[in-house]
Length: 320
Image (cartoon, rainbow, N blue to C red):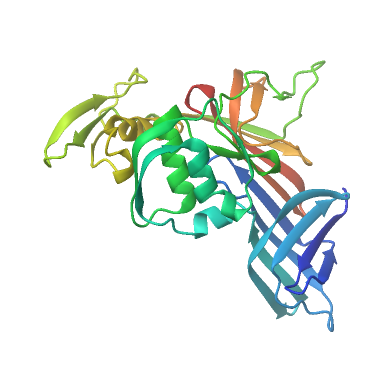
C-alpha cells in the first residue's frame, strides 16, 4: 500500500507530520459541500502535537484531503499513545456560517455567489446561465450554503455541488461513464469485493399539500416522477421563505430528495479509487445483474490494519 502522511499546520505556519496511520477515512458526498476526514496515528513521547488549524493528507505523495481541523484528541492507554483528528474541507465554512437575513431584489446567481460563497475562498462558478430572481428572501437560521442551494434549486431545478478544485457547479451531469464497476471475466473495470443493490419503496412520497399565504392547505401536488409502486405517503408543507414566490419549487425539491433513496447501489473496491461525487459510473455485476449508468453519490476511502478500501454509493441518474 502507498504510504500515508498527515500534516497538521499550526497557527504560526509550522507543520507537524505523522505517518503510518492506525486508521484514516476520507468521505466525499454530493449532498454536502464539505469533504470530511477522520484519522488516528501513533505518536511517541516528547512529540505531542500542539493546536492545529490546517490538515492535509497525502497518499504516495498525492493529496487526498486538505481542510481545517475541527477536533483533535491525544490519548494514552495500555497500547500506547495516539493522536486522532477530525477535519473538513473548505466547504465546511459554508455550513458553519449563518447567512444574514435579508431580502434581495433582482439578484442574479453570480451576485449571490459573490455575496455568500466568495468570502470563504470559492472563486470558480459554473452555471448554465446567470439567472435573475425578482425577489429572493434569506430567512433567519440558514447557513451560507443553504441560501445558495435554495436559489439554485429555484432557478435551475438542480442543486449546486462543490466539484474538484473547489469549483462550484450547477450543471447537467455528464452521461459518459468515467469508470465501470465489474468482475466479469475479460472486461476492464474496477474490481469489487462486494456489491449491493437496494430498492426502497418507503422512500417515495406520493403527495404533498402546500399551505398558501392565507394559512390554508389548498394546493395538492402528486409525485411528478410517478408512483408505480402504489405508495401512500403524504406530507403537509409550509413553503420556506426563500420559496415564497415559487412554492411549487419547494415541493419539487422535496419530491426529488425522496426519490434519490428509491434505488441505491453500493460497491466496495480494494485500494483507492479516485472518483468524485457526481461522476457517472457504470455498474455491471454478474450475480445481481446490470444496473447500468448511475451517479456516484458518496465516495469513502478507508485505510486501517484491515486493509485499504473504497466504498461507492450510487443512485439513479434520473434524480441527481
